[in-house]
Image 1 (cartoon, one colour):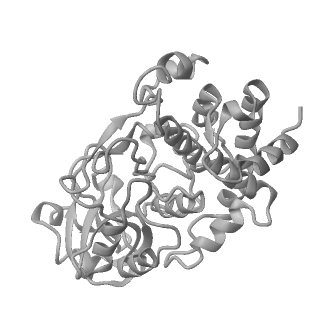
Image 2 (image 1 turned 120 degrees about the vertical axis):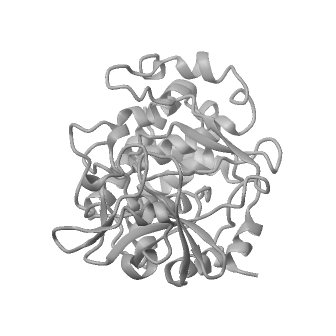
Length: 368
């Protein structure tokens, strides 16, 4: 049995892989090293993505590097016009794991030789888009909605290209799932805001009163995702994936993080607004945030250590790592505001055994 197949068998109702899974480590090594035997473009989307098939049959989604890590989102660019970043996919996998969610498919960086590993394997339509740039680099642009033309081509240096590889999940007829529109979806309009951005009671009046958010784990899953997106700076969360294979109250799957880590100096307030509106959170999620805040290791330290062995390390710049620590403090400040109004028991869902200890710590860390 391949590591890809072993990984699929570890998927459960509550996570994609268990804590400290050796299979995930082996799978990441396979993705980074095994021979590529198939290359095809993923249909749809605004930017080019490739599906790579490895010699053991494993499939993975490849997002190519467009620009150096130091290049940030331009100030005049809207969130829906920003380029995707391969390093955001890699960093998001590590962050999801450190937060204890384990709902993001394993992802690793890899450097490929476009001329030797891609060009001989691509389909005819993609083959036509390959060319040599004036600088002598091998480039291609594929076919997609917006950014697939010569002026937005993906180029090697001169043949080598860095990218992220996210493992492909089982087909939908086996792991039955579908995308669900997020209640906090943005307007994707240059002039119009979504209703939740201007209504402080949106969660109470529009979300919490309706299924599946009025019972079970769904609202807490979404708050986990809200915190996750605030830490990464991803404003492009229009849908989330719901799994039906394991019945009701299955954990969400966190997919598509390419538009995260765009600006280290900007903490997007609207990303955390749903938490302030709903004022509910799992205690286990709070425990992680609290531990990052007081140490002994901060979130930036844990992320730096976790990503150090990735083949394209360093994955994030130091400025982005420091931004994570600043955002943790701001999330805790939001939780403090909620607790001040609703009390600890009205905000934190007791999903761990040592609730009384952390409740006392909450009161100490959030004085009036």
